[in-house]
Length: 455
Image 1 (cartoon, rainbow, N blue to C red):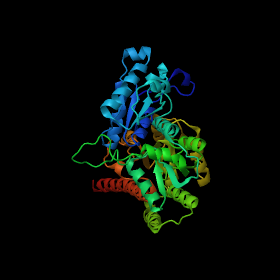
Image 2 (image 1 turned 45 degrees about the vertical axis):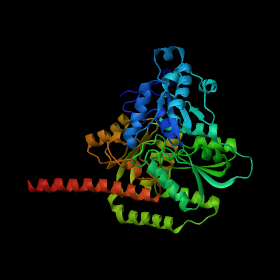
Image 3 (image 1 turned 90 degrees about the vertical axis):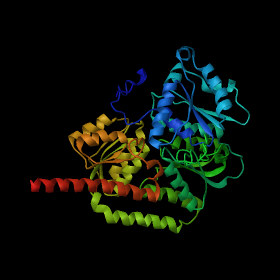
Image 4 (image 1 turned 120 degrees about the vertical axis):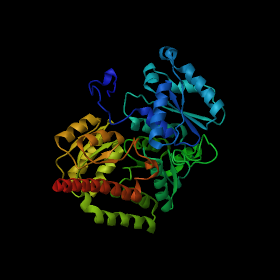
């Protein structure tokens, strides 16, 4: 599948074959769902909105609701101002959300609709909130869109009372599953720290089945919480690509110190997350977290011969690949091919720094790559394991390599949005998946050898 790019970016890339990413509005839509009582709104055609909802629904196995400006030929020529004003009025009248989070598509961006000015002219009921993020599909990726919507939350909502900061921490969790957000909340709660986390899709896209339909489930960060984030003493921004920009704006706007961290995936990244909170608030790490960490180390020792020295290709979103690469090095694996579809120089710089520290010379690292690149590398020299999204299964099948599904999207497996890969519990799950994938491959090869001997 070829991905169209605007003329001005042709000097950088001429197209993608099977991109290792999807478009900005998907990330913006997912971030908006992390606000309590929020209805995401796609300012563009119905087809775009339907695709974004479908893609998220397939990954999370939960209905994703969003509205659309429903562009027709007229809006494409004369602009979508009238469509958006009507949409705002209809959304609050019919669906009554607390927040309407508008994101743009490539069509409305190409037209050049002035969203803030249109919103000012619209009829917004008293007590309701409208925020917006510009998310052109032809730039960046879904991670960029997620980041842009997080920046909009801070720009529109975060406020500082101007007094002394409260003894509470903000956590920007990055583009992770609801199960991961629950685990982050559990870890911070175990440390005894008051937490404001946004966006927070736990309780929204993993809500239980009850006898009553709730259009807006109980989960999500409330508007009051996001506003109060400007009074916190510190913000932990998890993931350079998804969270750091919003933390920078919060620091500049409200004076909240931002601490940039990796996603807490793997032993070292989780240690960094826990220690950042410990050192900032001057607290002791509780026994339950100490025990969990000890279990991870014990499991690594017990299972190291399953994966020690095995080569691995890791692909997907940059924050996930960076954290997973660090954990693979901790496990004694050799990350051979590292690839993301999201543009940004920081990806290659961070990965290469890890390899230099580990003394590994041979590697291939590419930002803004695609799965065609990855397949070509693997054809030249195979790896023992692949770690990445569902779309890697075609390479894994063609080259007979086990695949551990990790990141977004995972469309052909169930339950994963509920099961964390962050924190120490996430470490155990990743060790289990990697070990079992390699063991199953070993057992299959051994069975094939036995069969040949019999023949």
